[in-house]
Length: 422
Image 1 (cartoon, rainbow, N blue to C red):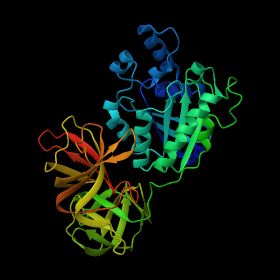
Image 2: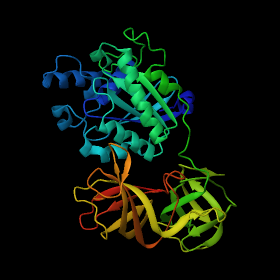
Image 3: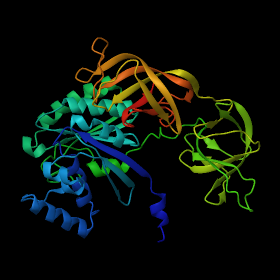
Image 4: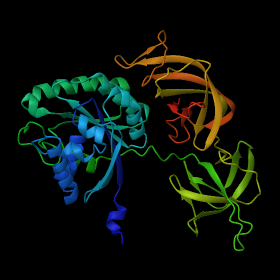
């Protein structure tokens, strides 16, 4: 299949949807795909038939993304649903995330790779706890662009006054969180007002429709840092006649630009060498940039293992056993000070213990609670850990790949937390 050069050159925008239960996240995406003619006939037939089985009289576009049977029966989103679509202006990958508090971890997963967050608010209810929670998580994950969609405007008689009240409250939240770029759109996802086409019911709104905004918004690319970082995932030794002496270190470039001839340092050994070649699928590259999956070979035979990192010797990451991080706790069992966990950062693994909970975030007030520091499922907290060996890392805002990690319960192998290094 040939790819249209114009299609290939389009920019890609990854965005996530969030909000409280029944705010209409899945309906918004369904409406967006339906009105932009991005749904195939068989998908449409499937939605109609599913709606009939569930006794829905009207077309329910939320069924397009709610793929699990339990989701359709309960009318909620449980798992993260990813959808791809494109317009003449841009390509999009959407992560539709759950609204229930107990599925906050799914929201964290869906938002972790997003450039933009779309947070829905029920016009009848205004700013709720989940609005604050999801806005904070978006800011914590360094998502610098947020679109607040005030949905169900049809249920408040398309009131400009009520919309403005909600925008004032959202503005206070945006200011408190230090969100750099926020937009506010009044919509009705059910009927399509201001989703793809302008609303005839809200002529007082003069901003862009939702589709027009996501097509034209300029994204500040904070996902491709300049600092050279190459976490090694595996060692390639073909042992063939053609490549008998080849030893390559394979992984994904986490930051910066690497090129043959560059002087590099390998962590944790601190040994230096120069890049001999950079290979990808049988091709030798003149350079590799952040996001490229490549194999790097060096001039010197250095002992390098999975979990090591190749960096610029003049620009090293932090190296320490004491790490301060913000965590979103996923597990039903509370976090315990002194407990041991397995830590994974990129392909590097280490044991660690929780030294201290510095504070737990009060989601209602966004204040630091230093008295009630019991961290339960879906809580967000600032903690300090000590690892069993020195690790090399950056702050999350400097590099979201080398600055993020997960904690795993060694007994059950469950992921108990996601952490962003401060």
